[in-house]
Image (tube, rainbow, N blue to C red):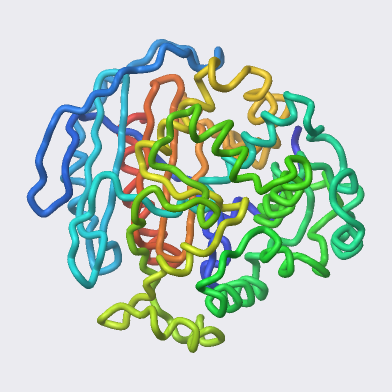
Length: 433
């Protein structure tokens, strides 16, 4: 299905206005086999885990070929630690080797070295967890992804969202609904202002809903494509109606525990499995003046960065639901694409089957919670994440059976976007070109 394009992928939605949106990866791939403890004095150990028996999709089933030049991953991430990027964690896995290393610091003020098992909110990279849960419930007949929102949501919500009674659940998840994105300007500032004001309270999809209501639609449902975090907020409300409880309960029972994602939890709705690392957003008084009084207590010692960990500890929304580490996130994406025991072909087809993809531009399509892109001679599945203070890249290349996942505790600014590109592009090029 090919739709008219309105705005290309909002990889850094409203960066100029404090974006917390999609950070689709721009690259990724690599080769080496060491597991490296945090700097400044890394220890190296072999960490090759067993490779699952599941096979990649037929379209990507050419024999793996990892004959790439040696790439020094540790040297690469060490070189990118700077005033902008405090710390990095990188996980790269091929059929024969694994690199799991870190560089820099998790805490700017106390100079705590970055651990390889660092956990942080992964932003929009978590959309695929919500999408997978919906696809599973669709297969089980507990909901129909092609039904319209009036099947589940009440009139007091429907009457305040243009075209709501014509929008399907699928359109919410593939961004073809035309619903206003609450992380667009100006409501993004309103959202974070309110979030800072209630920093010690748990904020769920119903909190985010107030910034979606009474906004103009981008287009009629199914006629174009526009990335919108709001679709996943509404999907979260649908899930609550279907399940009779918050989606975090079903996500734990159907995904996190069966997939053995032991370092992953639903943000704010579940107790953190372990501490999160701090995240840092470049302070710009001109941009965030409307909420300056809210964030004054969260400035770093040098007053150049806002420390955002406390902000996100209270946010648990379906467009960015998950706190995780790089190894769990890499395992999750590979499982979705290849593991036929944990994810049925029917569920996988609902998410990324050819007939369920929307072509955004030549070689790039979107399904439910995932992008599918042709890079060189290979198909790449990806969806990254961006939050104030955190950047996530999450990539899987089925034809090479290569996983690439990276975290930085820097995000939401142009400087961090450039550093994320500098981190991922050389790795991808190493594998793909």
